Length: 157
Image (cartoon, rainbow, N blue to C red):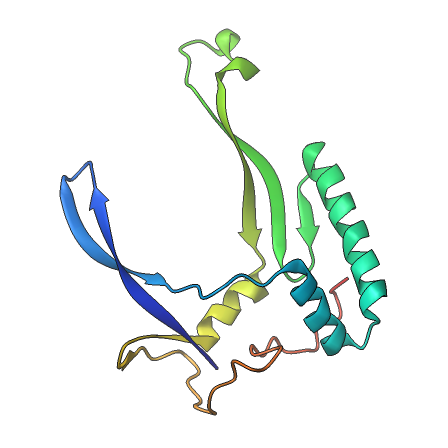
C-alpha cells in the first residue's frame, strides 16, 4: 500500500465564471532516466549498462514506429498513438492537413496498470482516504517496487 499526498489548487472554470479549490496529486520530484535504469537494474539483476542499451533500443523503436503512424504497445504499461486537433470545416472535400493546429501523443493505460490505483490511498494533512485494500504496513517509500503488481506476469518485455 502506498499513500500519495494531495494538495489544494485554485481553479477557475471560465464557462461557469466560477472559482474553487480542487485536490491535485503532489509531485515531489521526477525520476531521471538514469535513476530509473539504476533501480530497474537492481530489481532485475540485469547489468546496468546492458539495461541502458536495451532501453535505448526500445526508445528508438518506439519513436520510429510512433512517428510512422503505428499505435505502440508497451506490455504492462499501455498503448501510445498519435493524435491531432483540427479545425472543423463544413464540407468533407475541404478537409486537409492544413486544419491541424495541435499534435499530441495519446496514452491509454493497461488495465493491470490502472488496477494499481486501487492499492493507493490519498492523504492531505491529517486526513487519509480509504483505499480498496488498506493494509497498513508502514512507509514503503524507500522500496524500489512499492506497488504489488502480482509479479507473475511474464508478458513484460
